[in-house]
Image (cartoon, rainbow, N blue to C red; front, side):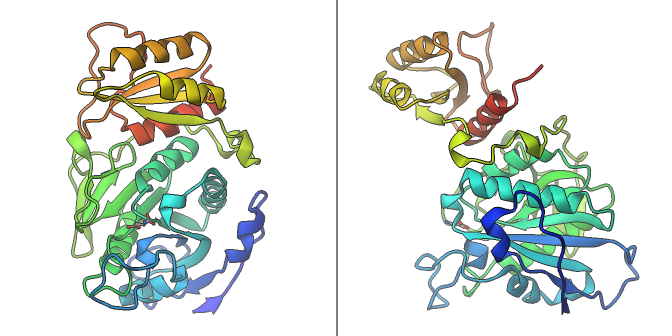
Length: 345
Ligand code: ASP
């Protein structure tokens, strides 16, 4: 293992100071082209979390361990040519647009390197699904970008991070791998489908109706269907340098007793896009719907998703408020923000 480095990319900004490179020499190069490397980008989360007591699974601090240490903690990874780079170090509940931009730029930088075959990104579980859809829409990579995370901190008795990291590298190395996917709990989930469905259990992620793309068993990917395809990349150039220039897009929920008051407040605060987490099959309380239609008439973009957690919004006819199809409310917010940054045609 030796220290290395690469040129500072444009836009890496203050996060550059966190960036460190470690190159892991493969002990065995039989299994792959010796010229090809994989880059593991660390952003923090519980996978890098630490508690003072090994039996404490909730009273820990996220984002305490560096990515090089996490990689070193998986002995099997010594067999793979890996670089490790710390892009950020945060609890993903605090993910923001500045870190997203830095991450997208670092991904784009490494994806463009001919000697790099794919990327793994370690992340917190809370907003992993948003980052997955964000990276897919911005990069639509021809190489794999595999997000992984953990529900237990690195110090836990039953820490799931090391296995998830190893499985993520297995997926990044798989023949034909491309696009953004997530690997957790032995499953590979598509960027559009992945969602956190449990706040505590180790099997906290689901791909909804779509199901997993495959499973990872003892170092092998068993794929059930084709690698997901999601259209062209928007490109990192659409992402504003200035965090305040990202469009303000909010999520509102339809529920019993909903009113238009929250829409009035958001409009007064300068909202440019609204995602409504509607009840059932995209149905919105009449008071809230009235306010949303008014906002839409005045130029605020609206997308209607379902708060059901699974399935999609099915419309009988062209709806007054456009549907987000099968995107969860959190992903629909990412989608709407990117549409505002890069209007189609
Ligand atoms: N709050 C943590 C995070 O999202 C939770 C986790 O990673 O499991 O960073």
